Image (cartoon, rainbow, N blue to C red; front, side, top):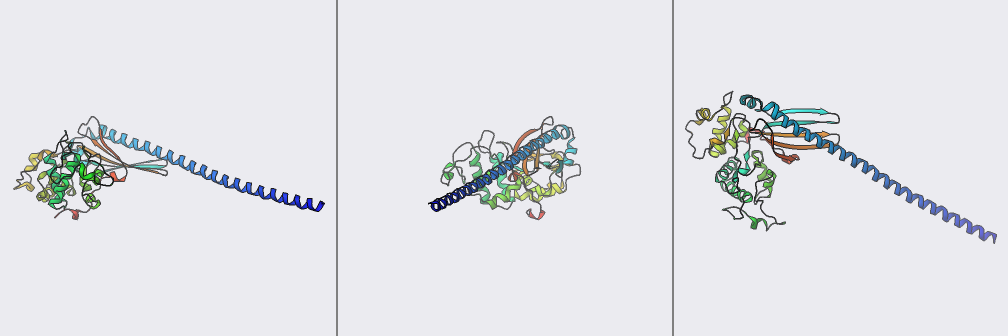
Length: 342
């Protein structure tokens, strides 16, 4: 009897030991899971804090740009402004945990996509013609340029009537997923990707020349800070792709002090024999009217890329007209002169 009891007690002790070990293993697994959750929660809180601080530095970049326009750029004479922005101005601001870099340049050397419609949302034939001219100068076939201009005009105009070679709601509702046209000026150049017939290759071929502007805002090109790489935009104002070489010559032969007036442009050697019926001299300006600011902020593990566009016609205040986040909002530039049409 005693032997039986002894065996029974030993079995019970073994059961208790196994149960204890199992409980300890479960508790250890739970502890590891809890520690992982705590570790990731701490990292998440740190990251949130870093990005929140980076956002404050972005706000500081915007305030700096506004202050620079009002206090430094505003009092400058026009010739000094032009001299300052013949090349981008780079500002670097190191701080504890990271740094901020600002690239500030004349924002007038791009085609205003808002010019394809008037302020009331109706089509603008002048803007559409200039847009088609820019596309042709960039290497697009004439028919493709005319089609895209019509498609874009239908996308942003106020009505839902399909224009010739255009595309309206009926074309986009057949897509998967279906959607409608914006019937408003583009909020961003990236919106061009939604257009009927647009491909990534075509988009990238024209992205450096374009900017999103409000409805009815015509392109205003500052010739006195332009480089030859900006000649395609200028040619669209001179009358079309036939005047690319005229635009390049106007820029490369610009007097050191700049043109400063239409009279000097008209008397320039490049304009000898110039007789374009579609010229838009009133869209050529001689002082920066837009300021384009690209800000890159690095703070610990956080990074922010933000772009701002300011209207600087009023020297007394900086009017922020565009704010975009991410590298897609950066305005690329042609770096190789050989990419220009010959």
